Length: 76
Image 1 (cartoon, rainbow, N blue to C red):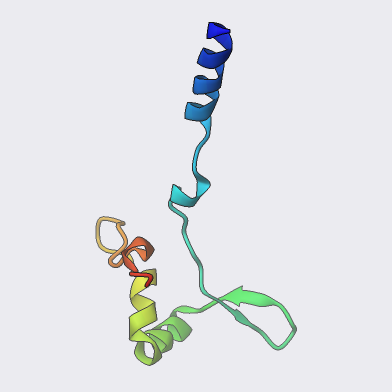
Image 2 (cartoon, rainbow, N blue to C red):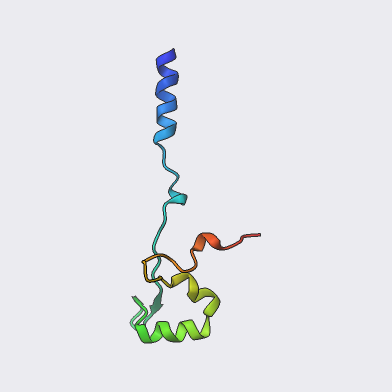
C-alpha cells in the first residue's frame, strides 16, 4: 500500500499545468480570399497607432522579452 501512495505522489508531480506554459501569439488578418495571414509590418504599425493598449502585448524588447506580458493583465 505504501508503494501505491508513493506512485500516486510521483504521478501528481509529473503533471504540468499547460496554462502556465508561456505562449507566443501572432496577429493575423482575414484576407479577401477567405484565408488568414500574418499582419505585414505596415499593417502592424497602423494597428499600433489604432490600438496602443492592445499592441503593447505584442511588442518585444531588445533582450527578446515581452514589454508587457499577457500575464500582467488584471482580470476582475
